[in-house]
Every structure is written in structure tokens, then in C-alpha cells.
Length: 74
Image (cartoon, rainbow, N blue to C red; front, top):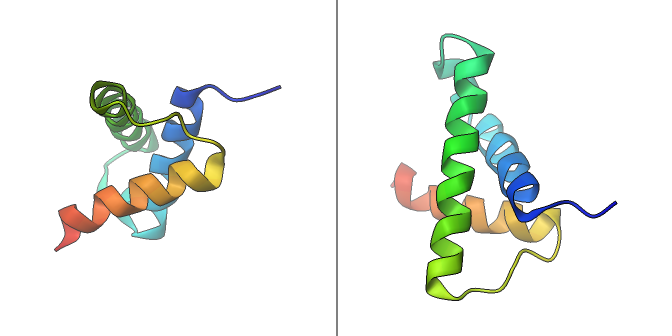
């Protein structure tokens, strides 16, 4: 079954923030997952507003989130 854009974006946020170790900066796992879910919704909304195409697969979503996070960590 194909994943929705929100599922792809949410998983990408969890993968990429965990890779950076951000998951450990939250007091609970639930708060970290809520953070990822909220940012995934923003990512999807911004892509729709800008007219960018949908994510093709999980790798595409991860690349997009990784690219976005580079602006946060600079």
C-alpha cells in the first residue's frame, strides 16, 4: 500500500532528527514525535503552496527534510 505524503514526511522528520541526535533533547519520546509530526505538516503545506511535486518515495522525503534541516543547523 502506498504511503501518503504526510506519512512520508513524518517518517523523514523522525529519521533525520534522530540522525542529528535531536530525539534525545526532548523529555519524552511522545514530545519528539509530536515535534516531527507538526513539522511534517508544515513541510507538506509549504510544498503545496510553492507548487512543488509530491514526494516520489521515502528517499525523496528524507532528502527534502535533510535539506531543510541544514538551514536550521548553520
